[in-house]
Image (cartoon, rainbow, N blue to C red; front, side):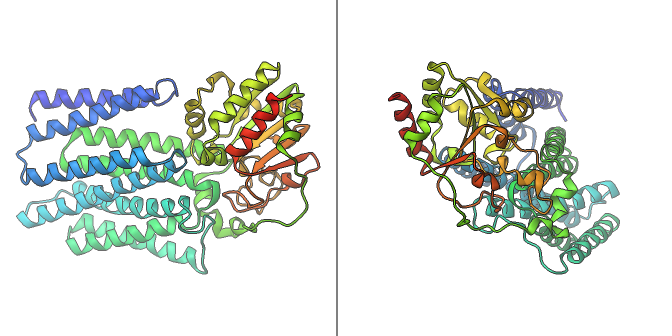
Length: 459
């Protein structure tokens, strides 16, 4: 490999590390994203000058089509649909890595080249894990898009089927490593697709984002293995970075939800995660008008706001910030309590509120603010449900049991802004809605927030 290519790849690798560093903070995330994208683009250009490529027109055509689809998709997708987009892009990456491995194996076999055992193992690993990542990501997309049930899906004998698929995958991986053959590789890809489906189907509710992060780590590892097969050091570096960071994020998210990764993936096999009604309750609740709630907020000393997915769907963050400004002008102390998976993905709610120019200083993480709920006169829950559901502490059979929650129930008064009594993403009823301290404010969050804002202005 020419020296200039090695230096270019080294520079791109350093940029990828700087990009990850930038993405660790909301203040530097945009710059980090641009650095990473520029490095990836430069590395792609290097390949055209370094390698004697064939079918260049087809390659450029595919890049142009993919770039247009990606750019248009990224511009049109709503903030609430970002997790779905991440799942799709991740699945495409894993599937592409598996296809590249199959094509490389076909080329090796076609020219009759000797395949070293480790290269054969890397090929088998890429085919299997890439297929798992692709199929699993498609299911997570379907769950988040509500094209299928968001609840765990299990069937009788599922653990046995999963076990057989795992054993079959191991056997085929060994066979492909010892004696590389295309039929074995294709069969391994099929088993990988089946394993991807079986891996994600039992996961539901707020655990789905954890699986997206895990599959992202899988894709990173397959890209790293592809780098070894293609003898491309930059793919090896980039894949390793994605795999390592995705693995750490998965562990942190699972820890944030109060469970292990294995429990997240296979907890439904014990039957606990299938509980929950999934339908709206007809039990009586206490509701009020926006004017009533405006009075409650306007004469409080301390208010904590819990933003959730419903706020993002209604695009009510700008009106919420105006409301907070009005309350702050009246001398009321205001904080936003941010759950680690508020809005379904880590950092999702921070980005949404940053759009409305909410100061970072007002955003308080769960561990930081949980002890202060008991001193709050009012907690205003806007479109969040599962992250304040006490069932996470009190119902061992609930799908969210063990997940750390925001202790909104410790406040003196709770106001829930909801469209209806429909349960949240986890599909379980929230007892906090029926608490005597709780007042419900029904309606679209943006519309109701506007009425609430006018009510506070009129005090």
